[in-house]
Length: 318
Image 1 (cartoon, helix red, strand yellow):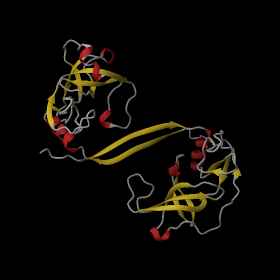
Image 2 (spheres, one colour):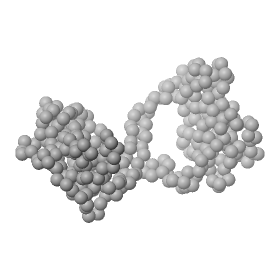
Image 3 (cartoon, one colour):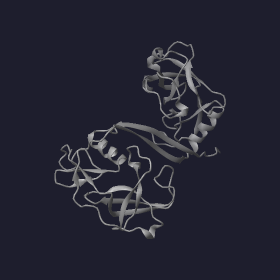
Image 4 (spheres, one colour):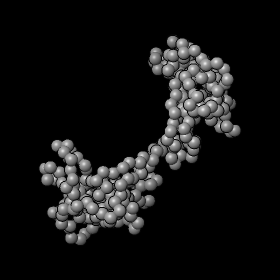
């Protein structure tokens, strides 16, 4: 019986976005230790500010300054902080309604333990020592027993020297992936430079990679079938944007990613095409896998030199 595999898996993508006038003013203000909100059509002050009224959908531009002190409206204790969270020691996630605001801001509260946190407690912002124009310029909140800030916010023009106009947010998901019996067998075969799928006992289609069940018939699959190694490009795209901050995708652009129907398979898998100019890749191109030394999967596919496959032989897999 195939050993069921399990391994950590990280999905990460640095998302870069530009900022409009409201978000730009808010983040630049944090850099200058100033918290800005925006006044909605109904008079409420929204912090963090939004660009459009959540009720009327009208554009909002009336910025106001609120106090760095506020009240906890609700909270949850975090006993085991994860990578890149605001604090490295246990802390509370809190929603804080700053003095002068009508909505709450989510951030971390530095507290000695859950017994020290309660709804209604007074807190204030602890500013980061180095500030760049990001939400992390608020290092965290901390308990505060001083005088409350002004309840009436003051108008602000949102103008700052050298405003922040864009941010990069590193979206990341860490989890443990267990591929299951069918995919474990497929991955084990790849270590031996073989590609193995499974055949449906009803429709007789061979699926690569296998999922343990036929997606058409809904029947469990168990019969293993070796396919390829050669195949046919069914469709493809030309990639013109270089992947950033991803070492295993450090590939010069442009390059081609394609769906490849391996010989004997009834489902196309995807892979990179190399060994041919990108503008010469075409549907029907016959390709074969190229394995890097010590790799557990093909590095890319290259042309075999065979004549192109006839469209009728792969049209059901496009």
